[in-house]
Image (spheres, rainbow, N blue to C red):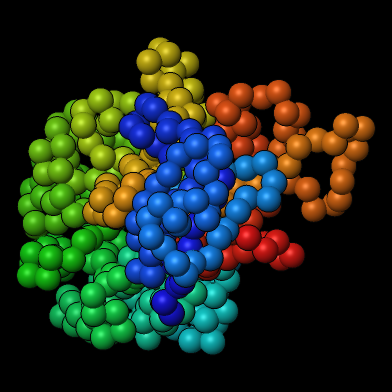
Amino acid sequence: MVPPKAIYVGPFVHCKTQLELDICEGGAIGVDETGKISFIERGTRVTGESAAKKHGWESFEVVCLRDQGFFFPGFIDTHIHASQYPNAGIFGKSTLLDWLNTYTFPLESSLSDLARARYVYNRVISRTLSHGTTTAAYYATIHVPSTNLLADICQTKGQRAFIGRVCMNSTMSPESYRDESTEQAISATRESIAYIQSIDPKHELVTPIITPRFAPSCTADCLEQLGALHKETGYPCQTHIAENKNEIKLVEKLFPEAKNYADVYDNVGLLTEKMILAHAVHLTEEEVALVKERKAKISHCPTSNTALTSGCAKVRNLLATGIDVGLGTDVSGGFSPSILEVARHAVWVSRYVAMIDGDDAKLSPEEVLYLATRGGAKVVGLPDQIGGFEVGMDWDAQMISLRTVPEDGEAQDEHEGPIDVFGWESWEDKLHKWLYSGDDRNTVAVWVKGRLVHQTSGYRP
């Protein structure tokens, strides 16, 4: 579907740097038929027509903000298990390893049923889009047909996605839910890669991502062959690392020849600049140095790490080292499909760390919004394409609506969002209110590559 030329008029906000927001109180952003930003005009008096005349556009749509609000880049979820979405919020008092066996593996195994997989995948994609997630790095299951179905649905609904067919062949995985052998794991992975190549040859929306579940779920030879496949194809890869202390002990037992957890991946050629490592809660200084040297990326998943009592990742240390960090919902270890929710929890977790390590550990609102957008873009390897509003970037964006409290202070309707804006707040105040109190009710429209992929019922941008 080719979107029409469009000019988006109103305030817009994006992260200029890790510490600085670019807040434009009024302007116009022109997006061409390819979904790329063609021009940006700033000024509260700029109109769609005046911007079009300046740039010689004759046929175009104009999209204006109707309420108080702003355009903001789409969120990037760098770690989410699409197959686990029905279990979001279901974890009891479990920790990682027993949670996998009690809740996760049975659900994932059931998605060999394509009707059930379609039911789940349609829902999780629709839900993440409604929360402003325009790009997601998905884990599917070991099943090729349902993994391919996830790619189909992402393409149909218009969400940019990295689709990973999960590899797990060791006896640490349930006999009823694992690859039969290394050969079968690699063959099935190749099959899914070929399918995604066939439906999106240029990977304009959907890209394969090589996905060993985590080191304990794979034999050494399986990891080696996945490393070779990564080198052969050049496709990105994703896995888990140092999430839980018992998991780390298990890795030490299973891979005694490795210096540490990160070394397991490094030894097989998986620790590269195209690797997304989820969690990294308990990395040693030696591992942090190795991750930095290899230019691997980290997905910070604070809601999951808290829910499963895995620990508090020291994100300030990772950023200070120069490692690229993004945010992940880690559904269903994480209870919410909202990156905005994850961003606020990233602030809270940094404050838990600060209670022990000192105030320097705290992350600011600006920093977590950066991790949710430009940081995530670096993690998925698309820093020049998504995550901000610059000429030449894709229009992956969300329209955020913030209604003003009426003079009598009464609610206007039952569908009002959760944020009360009184009119005297600064722009920074309004953004902070959105970060700490906002939800999908504020996200009234979402675009990916210029295509409208979500809008709130009854709201016509």
